[in-house]
Length: 440
Image (spheres, rainbow, N blue to C red):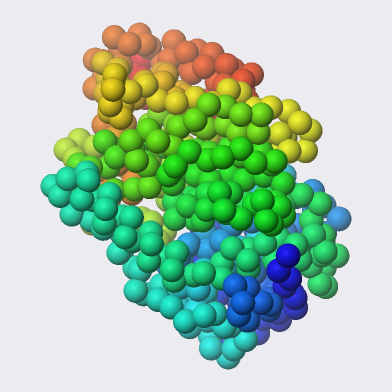
């Protein structure tokens, strides 16, 4: 088992502060009485020395910590997608979140480059850096599914080659977290590993190729990635895919992904579930940061459409809760749910409104007020995000009559989801209190 030595927390001064790859949600730390700390890490992985850091967000009073650590690696060109999706869930539960900077391109190209003096101990085997990967997912509308897939596979081979030490660094840091963080008194009793998009692929690779050798995690949640069907292991795994990961949805955007047909699908196992989510885009626009709003301000949208308000975060909250309950209490989550597809194809079947059939459901698809498009086919970076075209007022009246009937329909569905465990009550309350789009 590889080992890592943690040192810290590293002090901050006016001229030297922890580099934050993605500041999303930092304004909520004070609201939940959370603190952020940075620790340097040194060790040996893949036969060579390494130096990196972890970024930790935890309750200010360590006695409040639940004992659960939710870990993710930073994206190969920056960002922390799991924190973005579930930061409120983490802090509501008094869990500890840990960013592991195990991927050399972002660790060296972004973190170390931001402050060479603070991060002078960083070292990895030589390879490509984040700038070499920026906006490099193959993108060419009209190219065709097979060629797009081939180019995407070449891209994935590049990022795996660029960060060969990552799996052993991940395992070593997880082991160190169980031993305890120096200086604060927190030692993880349970450790989970999650990822979304490229980092979801990292989690899948760890499950497939490294868990048996390094059984350091109590459960896994890979999201928005895909690939060959995952094997059974001796820890619970919940895999989550939005409809935006399907090649049939992405192809009009000119981009591929890790999903290949339906080859990712498999039956439920004693410790495995797959949930394909109707209406869910690759990245959420319901809770946009200021940076998101700036980045998307000039992006085109189809006529009469707006950015999707589909709640990716609510889906991830419920499924992370299911994973924790499965691991800690042996409570199995609901059976897996997959999208309906047209016979003999991977094309998603749709209802009269154009919304996906089957899969994990929300009120956005069961009590619809718009047509959801999970990948916006009008260029980069729009394809990452979904859009929705609201139904006209006369259609809303035909479907629901008035606002009161609409509210009752939403409430009934939410109770079903809460009962089956695919929606948390606190998030259901947010949906209940949302403005009613149906005219009286």
